[in-house]
Length: 370
Ligand SMILES: Nc1ncnc2c1ncn2[C@@H]1O[C@H](COP(=O)(O)OP(=O)(O)OP(=O)(O)O)[C@@H](O)[C@H]1O
Ligand SMILES: [Mg+2]
Image (cartoon, rainbow, N blue to C red):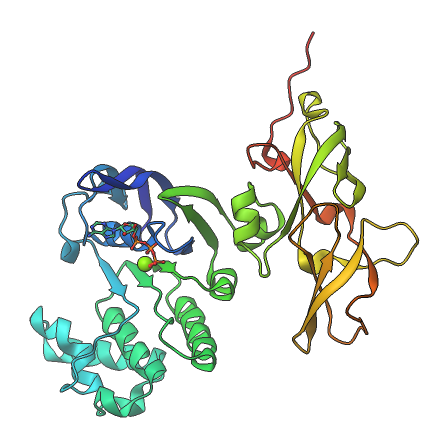
């Protein structure tokens, strides 16, 4: 069991500031996923938690104890990296036992823990093999096993699956989900670029951008109620469509004009939002072919990517908008390139963001003037 607290954690390399004051509370047994664009500081944050990087300022606590100055080996943390670097001349068993042997644990204990880990990871029948006689996915499982035997309180993963091919990724992702189930008290922090891994594995996702936290929440919270434009476009694939617009009537049901027409959005906006420019968002999968005469959008089908189960339809809605609107529609709907298409979405699937990119859902209602 271990909870983690990060308070105003900063990291700089020389004069280069990388992490700008991270505040985060992680509960014991949680599965936390860090996502964000390349270079935003995910690995740096993970390595700082592990103690492989010294933080420049701030406090890092594990179970209430400040560990800023505690060496990595004493933090009760194990880390699994993208490149698994097993010892090629050692069997799977010896690879997994290595750190315990170095720590001079007794033989019976080593044997027990290696066999337990092998069981969890379905590696029992490979214990005598050398790494070269195993697949990439199996080798990555050995690397995870090496970490499990250390009986960590906190497990850190830095893109552990990104060297694997698509099918193996799926299989190993499920192994990791099961691993978490078998270790309910172990806190896990997992870095990934993969949307599916983030959505399926996380209890909570932390979205990072340029060394700052943009939003923390459950996968569905981030998907349904992104706090700002960045999170809205980062979570979900293809990304949320964003169009310019204007608030016609502020209030509990905000009326807006957007580039395709008008909409009434069931999101409260303060009176001060009246007449302001906004960004209007709708996810590709929330659009559907309009049934009636009136529709949210109308345009010409510019391009279609048929993926079988779904098709991505690029609709040119004109009016100076260069980016096409992308609609994710069922694959079996007949659609022709060049045809006129009307698209709609339910009011509750619409998003509006203020001029700073913050979602109006996050706005506090304004105090009424007396
Ligand atoms: N030892 C170092 N010295 C100087 N700058 C560094 C060092 N290590 C990392 N950086 C910089 O810190 C920033 C964050 O790097 P980091 O590896 O944490 O990013 P990341 O989010 O893990 O990216 P990726 O998704 O590509 O792995 C980058 O701009 C990187 O160039
Ligand atoms: Mg990284």
